[in-house]
Image (cartoon, rainbow over all chains, first blue to last red; front, side, top):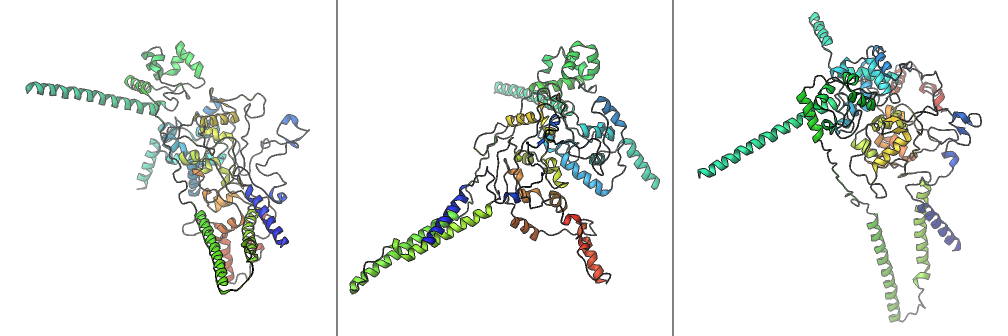
Amino acid sequence: MKKIATIVVLVLTASIAFIGCDNKRETGKIYMPDMAYSRAYETYAQRDSAAFTTDATAKGAKIYYDNNPVQGTIKRGELFPYTLPNDSNGYKMSATVMNPIAAMTEAQMKEAGRLFNINCAICHGEKGAGNGPIATAGKIGGIANLTLEAYVKMTDGTMFHSLTYGKNNMGSYASQLSRDQRWMVIKYVRSLQPKPATEAAAAVSDTTKKI
Amino acid sequence: MSRYRTIINKALASLLVVLLISFNNAVFAADGEALFKANCSNCHKPDADYTGPALKGWSDREPSKEWIYKWVANPAQMIATDAYAKALFEKWKPTVMTAFSNLKKEEVDAIMKYVDDYTPPVATAAANGSSSEGEGSDNSLLYGILTLTLAVVAFILLQVNSNLRKLSDEKEGVDRGEPVPFYRNKTYIMALILLLFVIGGYFVVNGAMGLGRQKNYQPVQPIYYSHKVHAGTNQISCLYCHGSAQDSKHSGIPSVNVCMNCHMAIKEYKGDPIITEDGKTLDANAEIQKLYQYAGWNPDTKQYNADNNKDGVPDGAKPIPWVRIHNLPDHVYFNHSQHVKVGKQQCQTCHGNIQEMPEVYQFTDLSMGWCVNCHRETKVDFYNKESKEGNKFYSIYEKFHNDIKNHKMDSVTVEKIGGTECQKCHY
């Protein structure tokens, strides 16, 4: 009888202990923490400030952790860095930079459209007419209508410069789109724009030739 | 009679005149608005400084109307020749206003009238309230009360039964001795112990399973960032900020520059009031100011702080110490890109209706049972040769199948299905 009573009391206290710690602001309890927490440093894990430092001047005393990639290195398969500086001179010179992508395959176009809809359409609209949800709600002014003549005339290089460094109210998209993806998106924007008069005329004459 | 008629006629005529004038005005104002939006709104707001100065009170501020016409037609020339224009440029440089030589004087007048009459639209404080609270709540309370009532009834019936038996015993003259009171009755005590054991056991098992799981975990974040406002109201794609979910193991937390893509321009919150979990109304503008602190951005000069200490970021800028909510134990490998890009899963499948959460909480328990359940039910999207869509990875199985059928091979080794790939064991 006594044994049973002890078991019951134990079970009850255990259950109360488990129910007692139910606070949504806390992570709750864990068992076997050595299996739950990684010993190796994981992405977003807190660095041990006793062993690591991000301050270059404290190099030597602690292990210096540099957040930046090693100078002069690029990601595999990534295009070479864009070297024009972020100033008015660089902006002017960007007009001469050529788009390394000559023509896009159907799959590339689809992917570029997807990237455009994620990153650009929120302001510029799905058709590039400057009427995305943020623009129509009037939250950010001065959103470019990419189908206007000024943007049809703008060279790919200048667009790339603006995407890389930002322009007026637009921020830099260098951290969200790789160089390759930026050039692809520019090609996609071209597909949304009306054809320039000369090109359209050429296309018409082409078809007439065929006939 | 004729007198009345003249009065009526006069009244009608004046009404017509008033109508015409007001109608004309409306057209005029709308024109100004359209012109403003088409030409000026890229850099100017009527009531607030932007890339260029606020335009309200424009016509009174500048030297003369003629000056304004000239300025609009050719700002660059004005800066070179006119002292007032030069002072203006000094204040707003390096941006020079674009020349609008195509705008006629009447059109400039219309724009001036529009900006001077401009009143900001009043935010509709639609307090939608939480009306659905309590609705459709689970019936466990009802069942509990019912069980309790039935137990009491059973207990009373048992007591009545024993009393009746006692009465009949007395009547028949059978002496059974003093009856044992119910709290010393072994049957009752055993039943109680069993009941307590079952209830206690239930909570112990549940509690033990909950160890290390954090369903509904909703930590206080350094900035009150509302996914409801960003992903819900403003319809920003999840991948805009968490783009690495499609490319890597982790769904990255956006760096502060991604926030600043929009918040360089959006300085204040104008939507419906946000009520926090504690029931207070949130000062959303203060939260945006916190972001500027972390970004090292000065909203008044609209520039990042100078980098005097040469650490590559503006002075005072530091990463936002967001609190991680979803956390898998170290012994589980989970890859976002496999699920988002290859498996084509929606974010909401695992994270719940994020676009309706003002403060994010963990929607699922992220237990192994929950993972496995989804893997049991989700169909693999095999490559379809006709539509050229689907996952080509599994087409090799089809090849093996055909090869065995055509006697090109007799069996498939583990190596053939990727068994010697390093990542099978080492990741």
